[in-house]
Length: 294
Ligand code: IPE
Ligand code: IPE
Ligand code: MG
Ligand code: MG
Ligand code: MG
Image 1: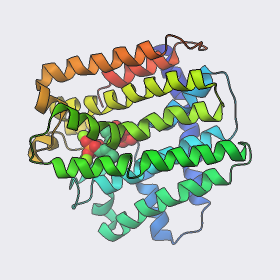
Image 2: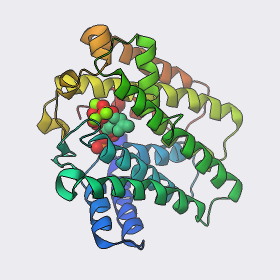
Image 3: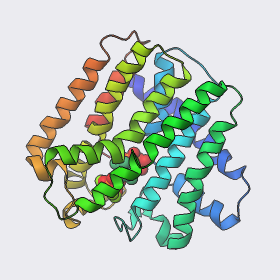
Image 4: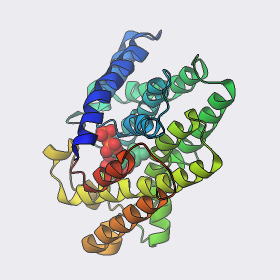
């Protein structure tokens, strides 16, 4: 990782941790529900999504006090998606972020409800922000709902589940990945652009960048499931093969998957060509996404 990206993460990650903690401790909820939400939120994710929102704003040289809260709500929704993804009825995993999964510790019912609460609360938090205009907040909420819901993450999870044990085409797999993972990750990039109220020209360049980064992120997740260890990943390695998931390595071979990852990186890189940025943070992020080892 470059020095610039390392220092950006070292500066912003503690702020995200603090914001997530206070967003949950400040709400009114039965204590076991709060405990279950905080358990998964504070289990130590990489925080790539909220960091991306803040990175885009930094690149555009825009400051907004509420940006860190918007960024943190995306992490809340992402964490809900992980709690539900790990449930016995879904991927049936017992390790996440290096700890026993939420349902192992709190039981399935509370895990489901903790996920429900995280996703529901997130929208209200955005609605109440004082430093973003009502028009931009509606846009943020609208696009978040689209990215997380049936046209995005949830829809992708359904296709992923239905595809288990089936022979899919590369096109079908791309649709799954773009939706189950790409949509919310892309949103985290575009949320920064929405808060910055960018021109349509910059928005469309960032949309292109975000699309390819979102897909690249899940291709690398598939690769790491094969090449990583459970200790390194903080989740059970080798699960995709056991669950007969369609993945980039399973359809294209490992070599083909890595080629496709590079192809997505190149397209993301090209999308940035026409935008004036502060420094190279978005290129460095793209590098990190495609080379990360966890
Ligand atoms: C894992 O996401 C699930 C996917 C969408 C591939 P991350 O790799 O961002 O997981 P955390 O947040 O760091 O735990
Ligand atoms: C899940 O993809 C994407 C989500 C919406 C959570 P995976 O099922 O591959 O994610 P991991 O590998 O369990 O983190
Ligand atoms: Mg899954
Ligand atoms: Mg999973
Ligand atoms: Mg995976």
